[in-house]
Each structure stands twice: as C-alpha cells, then as structure tokens.
Image 1: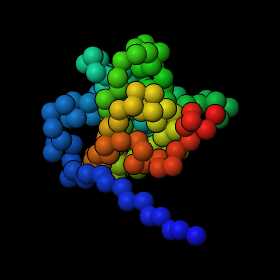
Image 2 (image 1 turned 180 degrees about the horizontal axis):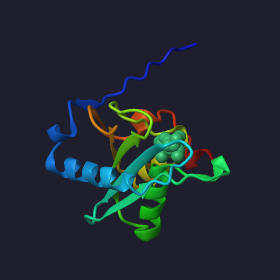
Image 3 (image 1 turned 30 degrees about the horizontal axis):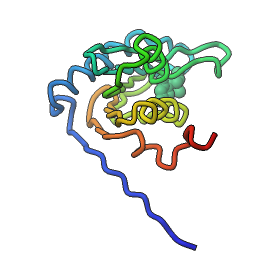
Image 4 (image 1 turned 180 degrees about the vertical axis):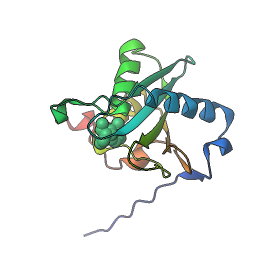
Length: 160
Ligand code: THU
C-alpha cells in the first residue's frame, strides 16, 4: 500500500480591490449577474461570469424551481451558456460571487461538486486550465489556477 498526498495551491486576496484589473472586472460582472438570480427558496443569490479568450464575458445566476432539484447553480448556467454560444472558444476564467437575504456572506462561496465536475469538462476539452475566482458579497477572494486543484482525481472521458 502506498500513501499519496495532494497539496493544492491557491491565492487569497484581502478583498476584490487587490485583484488585477482583468480579474476585478470579471468579479464585478459576477456581482452584477447575482442580481438576476432567481432564488426565492434559498434566498442565496449566486452570480458567475465566464471570461472567454475572445474577450466576451458570459454570465449566469442560480435559477431555482419549486421542484427543488430542477433548479440550476449559477456556475452551470454560465458555463453552459458560454459553451452553447461560443462552442470552440477557450474559457480563461470564471468569477463567482454570492450573497444572501438572510446573512452577510463575507467569505468566498465554494462551487458545489456538480459545478466543479461541469466546469472541469471544459478544462479537459480545451487542455488549458480555467482560473476560478471566488468571493462572497465582500471580504477575501480566493484565486485558484485550475479546476483540477479543487476537483483532484476528477472523472473524465478517458474512463469511457
Ligand atoms: N448555488 C449556486 O448557484 N452555486 C453553487 O456552487 C452552490 C449553490 C445555488 C443553488 C441554490 O439556488 C442556492 O445556491 C442554494 O443552494
């Protein structure tokens, strides 16, 4: 038996103001996108903004449903929208921001497992990492250089 250890690298910024201009602009788009969330059941609004190599920013927000599992997270709304609109354009980064009507979200909201799997599909397809930026409504921002850092040992098409 061999033991393996996984170590992940990520950067922590004290606030979005410490990001470089491109990352800050993308995070501002995620904050804007959050405003169109439809989240009457959880009161938790998430916005996601996808930056493409052609300079386009495609946004998404969580869309809930009275039949709860039918709803979709912001990240998947955004990344599927991006791939549907620009199927062959490299995805450079995704910024995610969350807020709540019930409390102040002052730490970064982590993408759920389904969203990590959905997003890593495109990283594997394009063979180039996708940067992830995570923020609540204020406070620290996490920067992760690749989805593989937050979904190690991911399932992929090579198993099929
Ligand atoms: N949500 C997202 O949009 N992204 C995530 O990664 C985590 C959760 C949404 C789904 C649901 O509408 C609400 O947040 C509460 O789970």
